[in-house]
Structures are given as structure tokens and as C-alpha cells.
Image (tube, rainbow, N blue to C red; front, side, top):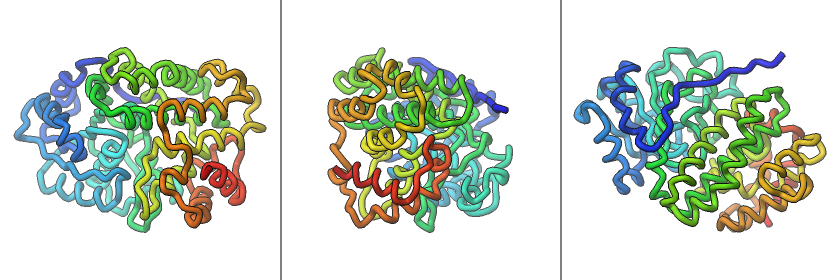
Length: 377
């Protein structure tokens, strides 16, 4: 039996930000709590959001989102939400801001620590429809968190875990590609490859969900057609539109499940000694994971190869590595600052990650170590 559900209300196109006031009214949000980061404040994007609010004086702003969102930031923001008397959340930014916004919407309506709501701790049943209403407005084209049911957070105990529930899907995804026009080339590439990783992993996940598979293939095709264009010319509106669509499709599809790429990138993103970008990690890990999974995917690699333009299914890992290189992604984990002494703990944590079980070939600790060593270069 296959259970298939999709998803939330989406407003998508250039100029969609102008619809914010009407959409807030539909959700009954009059005192919004905006979760964003300081980079967007500096870039002037927050001013554009504030200008679109029906009454900017009623809004409160938390702009201290870390690159990898943390429980401590969520608690600080939740305190500010309550103190300001807010009645809804707007996640404005990349995946970190949107994931933090989901955690805030959860904490202000549910008692407990974030660990209590983590999927691997049995938390999915503890998250109810009481979650505060949330609008997600992406300013990158990568995570697709605007339509995702998960929030990946670094907890106070150091673990990076997923909070997963249909109730965490934002009530509205407001997708305006105009907000990505000034995204720098490096961040455009890294976030775009995150979208590719979502499309690839969900397509390979063994659960039965043909609609998700079709969406994932369409998203992968868009990334490989338009990402290089967006990197080369940030003002290419067609490329920006299609990359935002690809990112959204990746998250629509990964309701089906992800795999070993994310099982490894999640704990790597929680390492305290170095700050590692999630999308970049996914891109660097992808070739080795694809080689590891090759014997367990049937004809899926051939279907993927046809979509992205690789010569064959067998050539897919090599194609991904060449695509990474073309976009200026670091060559390996070593170049990103990962050291060999970190690997054992990463492999341990990968075994406990919620994406571990949905990889087509379930890895052992030693196999994760092999993937990591190969990805070190």
C-alpha cells in the first residue's frame, strides 16, 4: 500500500511578494514574527519584505539565524515571539531561516525540548495541528524548505536532527524568484546542488511514490539545464525562475525519503570546529554515495542519466563530479576543512540519522567510513 499526500498552498512567480498582505489575512496573521538572518538585512532584502507587510509596525524581526540553525537560537526567538504577542511566523531566507522558523512555530505552541520532537526520538506523533501558522518565503533556490515537512536543527546536545511532521509544512509558500536575482555565484551553485541532491536521493529512495519520482526527475532536469546559467549570469530571470521551481520540486519529492548523502551531511553540518555549508556537503558527497548505491537501484541510474545528460547510468558519479567542478564546488571534504579524526563520529551519527533507513542500500559503519574517505580526496 502506498500512501501519497501533497502538500500546501503555493504562490509562485516574479512579483509574488506583493501578495503577502492578502495571504496573511487569509491565515489570520496580524502580528507576524519574521525569522531571517543578518545577511539579508545588510543586502536590503528584509526592507523589501517589510514594505510588503500590511502594517510594518505590527511586525517583530529576529535576524540572528545561524548558518546551521540551533536550538539555542530557536529558544531565543520563541521567547521574543511570546514577548511581542505575535500570532504567526514568516520564515524569510534560505533553508536555515525557514527551518528555524518552523522550530519557533513549534516551540511557541508545544511544551518540551526540541529533542522531544525529533523523528528518531519518536517525536512525530507529539507535533500537533496547534503549530503556529507559518509563511515561508525563500531567498535562495536550494533546500525547498518552503514546502518541506521537516526542520533540521542542531540541538543543545550537539546532535543535528530532523523534526518531521505534516504540521510543520508552512501554510503558504510564497516563491518570488526576484528575491534570488542578486544571490552570489558561489551560493547560487551550492544551493542549486542541494536541490539536485534532493531530487536524486528521493528518486532513488525505495518507497513507492511515482508522483514524487516524476517531480524529482523534472527537478533534476531543471537544475542541469539552468543552474550553470544562473551562476554565470545572476540576472538571468528564466534561469532563476526554473531554479526556484527545481528547489521546490526537490522538497515536494523528498516527502518520499532521502538517503546516505543527507545521513552524512547532517552530522557534518553539526561539527563545531568548522562551518560547513549543507548544499556544498551534499554536492561533494554525491559521487561516492552514487557509486555505493549502484548495485541496488535497478535501472534508475539510466533514467537519471537520460535526464541530466550523462552518457550512461554507470557514468553518473563521474558526471556529477564534473558538474561540481564546472560550478566551482570544492574538490573534496578535505578542501572544506574536514579532518580525518572527525570521520568516525560522523559515521556513528549517520547510522542514527532519519535519512539512513531510506537509502536504497543501507550502509554499515564501515561503509559510511569508506564513503567519507573517498570523499576526502
